[in-house]
Length: 295
Image (cartoon, rainbow, N blue to C red; front, side, top):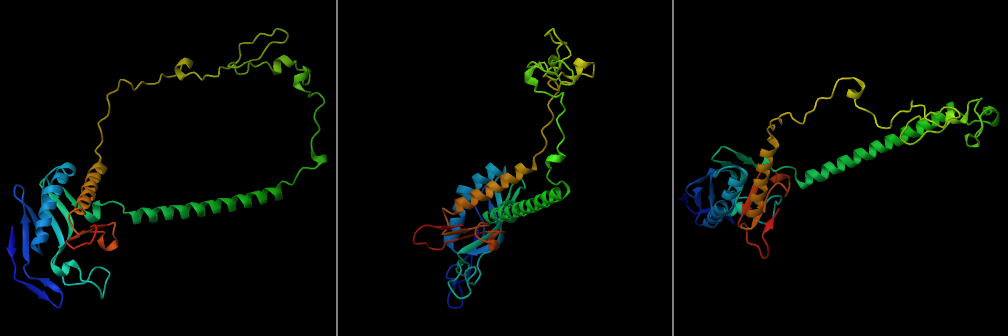
């Protein structure tokens, strides 16, 4: 639904000869613009195509209902393009652009650009830089602490001199020679077998004493303790609600909406473009010599 508006002329460049006030597009469901927007007929046709061909299927897929309302921020406005004070006119000055902040469905689910777009590439790069700087700072602090610790150890524990080294007891001989350690038969000191732990042997017999410990640690029920409770037959717990899934659906809708807009409009800008567009989509019908401009 649209309402014809009088011709507009603001200054040497702003305005359009045949603007319309666009109230809604489509039927069953009808998608309204809140507030209504002042645009050209070409812009109204492009919005209608975008909504019916792309946004409605995306809303049903990701938001679980049909799109019924688009919350707008700006349409006609006589001003220069963003970031330019004395250069080309913004498409808003020709009633050829719309800024959108929110999409609402029949089931009350809303996808808001500011809240649901998710981290931008700028955000991720900034987080990586912060994490890298923190890691470098922590490593420098660790190296400094280690250097101080080593310096303190050198002060409290000077290197040993030959006179400070204790003499080896005369009874301690090479175990491989079969001699004794202070009169203890070699068979008691060595003879451990793989898998038998201590593997002590009685002198002169070559047989294990049976006192060896097994390498495998037995469970508490083998030692007379309480048996472990098996959970294999317990009913599975109910799946907890996952609020993150709903957020992800809204994010996927917004990013897909932005992507499809790039194929229709001469310019499609969103949060990835710059901070000024973090909270809305800008779409316009600017003529391009080559490809549409999409950020």
